[in-house]
Length: 115
Length: 112
Image (cartoon, rainbow over the protein chains, first blue to last red):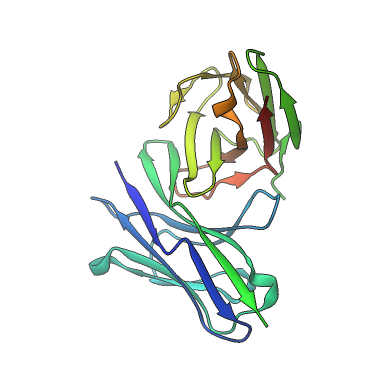
């Protein structure tokens, strides 16, 4: 079974600083990878996804992630943090076959942004 | 836009009660999922369904069952609620294997 590891359950950055949230996965086949964001008392919203093609993926709100097969990583970055980025972030990998898939999630990283 | 609607945002139930959590999606998605979310554990898959009347166990199915009688509706059933089932429950749907899942707003269930 596939698994996802998010390094750091809490990350704190200053407003305007680089955001780096780490995600490593285990997969024996080319994976489909996702980053989701969750604001308080809300469901999950897709930030970006990697399926095939370009390994640098751009998402919403200025976030991007790079798929590195050799490192089995899919780290999320944003050049300049904004107060509104404070939320919980989840990395996920798709597992399945045929016509269905299920997403396996990491434990999440809570991002705090301070002035 | 895809919409996944969960019938309740907050629920309080008593130990031993049978609890139904309802989820409806409006985009004709084949796949539907129930996750539970607990601090420090992320999202754990309880059950999923890839077609009407089809269901598969996820990682933590014990104490739960599901029903999918219509394509758009996926129900999670707690046969006899216990305090360790106090959690946030998230429903999701997706179209294809490479497709992302779309999530509902979540139901925060408290069992007392």
